[in-house]
Amino acid sequence: MSSGKLNVVLVHGAWADGSSWSKVIHGLREQGVNAVAAPLPLTSLNDDVAALDRTLERIDGPIVLAGHAYAGAVIGSTRAANVAALVYVAALAPDEGETVADVFYRGAAHPQAPSLAPDAHGLIWLPEDAFASAFAHHAAPQELALLAAVQRPIAAACIGKKVERPLWRDRPSWFLVAEQDRMISPDTQHFMVRRMNAEVRSCEVDHSPIITAPDAVTSLIVEASRAVSAR
Image 1 (cartoon, rainbow, N blue to C red):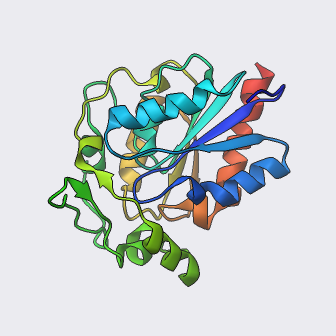
Image 2 (cartoon, rainbow, N blue to C red):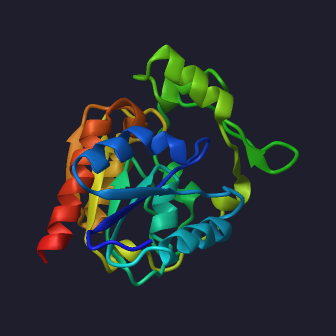
């Protein structure tokens, strides 16, 4: 895949797939930005980073890499030289020596946050009612039904591995804080923003603005893309 323009690669989180970015992809392409979604197996952090790297290898030129939720750990773990900037969307950004679980469970959980535990196969499923109560509580009923029907579980192995030096320490980063997030505490998101020294945009959105507030997400990615292009 080659282009004279900057490219954007979008990375999905747990209990989702690349189609969760569909509204953002449409919005970016309307503004002339190339955008593709990287498919993750959600089987281990190493597997997910390898899958992302395979997508990045197919693209020529600089890339803005955007991750939602769990995918923040994935985009921070790549070493691809063509990544020019990172965009975190209500995402987890573990630092060196931390796990995804360390930052996810930092601080008090929202009263409506679901209780999560792996099944006999080491897979973590989101309870169906949690899509409406915590994952995307601003979504329309038909969207919630689809999210629950197509959810993909995340392996416990994804959240227990300590990360190496994250890429956000070496690349400019942007962060959309979801102030009404019931999955990842907004306080935790602000904590991560401060230590990342990221450009921050706080929005009154739920945990899944890529679905419920795609214009805000698109705007931030375009902002990052223009900043990279101007350098």
